[in-house]
Length: 73
Image 1 (cartoon, rainbow, N blue to C red):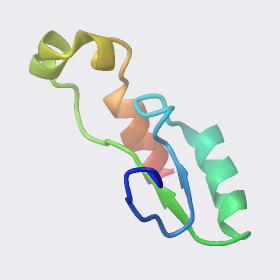
Image 2 (cartoon, rainbow, N blue to C red):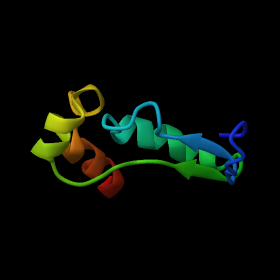
Image 3 (spheres, rainbow, N blue to C red):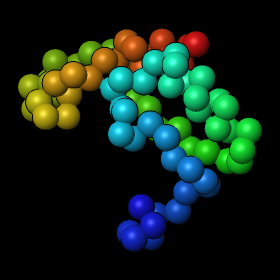
Image 4 (cartoon, helix red, strand yellow):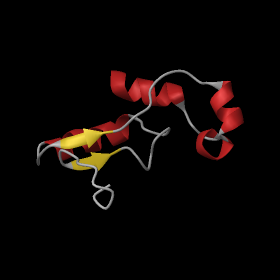
């Protein structure tokens, strides 16, 4: 992100585990947030068959409901 000139408020979490964010990850993020500002990237919602069909490499193992439950946690 820095190479492309995209600013962030601090550390960014969630990009590499997008689609598989759960309560354990959220516990980690909350603990990290006391160290300074963070940015959390998630894609909550419901399963979208069109996304799985059109972007199988990105959404083959994506778990929308787990992401949503992590935010509710």
